[in-house]
Image (cartoon, rainbow, N blue to C red; front, side, top):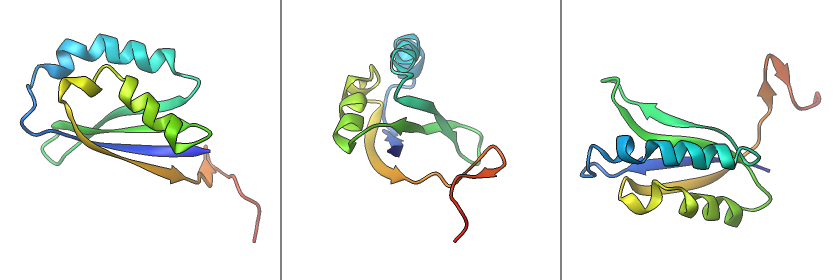
Length: 101
């Protein structure tokens, strides 16, 4: 089952958190590539990186929650909150992933 994870970052977080912990965070993502299919920051109208998005393949939402809590960004105070949303992918690479009707 696929999940979209939407992260909201704390607006008062130390601006150096990303830089300080990025290599550990990227290493974590790579070590969990079997589950975390895509990840990255979202950008606002001012082209400032903020918040984040993961696409995760997991059996249960609890498995996604465990990943979030193991991420080196989690204990830093960067993340204010998150939402785990089940996602049904119906289209990819120019093709429908569901049959007609």
